Every structure is written in C-alpha cells, then in structure tokens.
Image 1 (cartoon, rainbow, N blue to C red):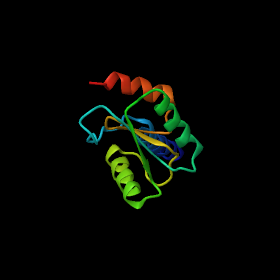
Image 2: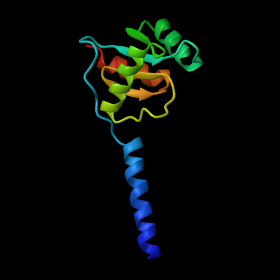
Image 3: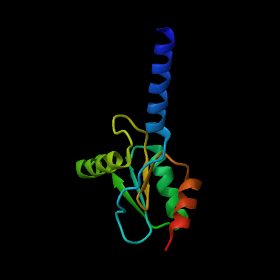
Length: 118
C-alpha cells in the first residue's frame, strides 16, 4: 500500500512538472512580420526594464498594458492556448513570434527574436 501511494505521488509530480516545464505549443502569431509583444503593467519594474531594453536594441516590439481588460483577456486566451496557467504568473509575459514566455531574460528574447527575423 505504501509503495502504491509513493508511486501515485511520483506519477502526479511528473505529470505536473511536464505541464509546467515541458514543451509549450506555439500559438498563432499576432503579426506577419517578426515581432515581440510585451504584456505587462506600467507599474511593473520587470516590464518597464524589458521595454527599455527592446527600445535601445531597436527590436520591433509592441507593448500591451494588461490593466486594459481587452489586453488582459487576449493575453489569457493566448496563454491558455500555449498551455501556460493564467491563475498566477509573473510579468512580463513576452510573445516572440507566437512563442510565449513568462518573465524571460532580455538576452533570451533578443536571441530568439533575431533567429526569427525574416
């Protein structure tokens, strides 16, 4: 009985870990050209740092303030499509040509954007 409980718990942990950290499905890109979409808040330091870095590096980006309900709803829909939980998440959420990432490092965003530039 004890082994069955341990095995069940291990399977549960593996499934939850795969859902959280496993491969995510890309969603339909917002634009035809290569882009970065930053979803965040004006009051979020991480979001504003990402926006400043994108401006300085001349990356084609768009900023969406999730305090506006239509932007928040769009983000949550895109996160659900990508298999990312919308229950609690850090900002910013960055969409790079349809690939969503929660609070990525700028270097990661820049590298991924430059690989996808058409």
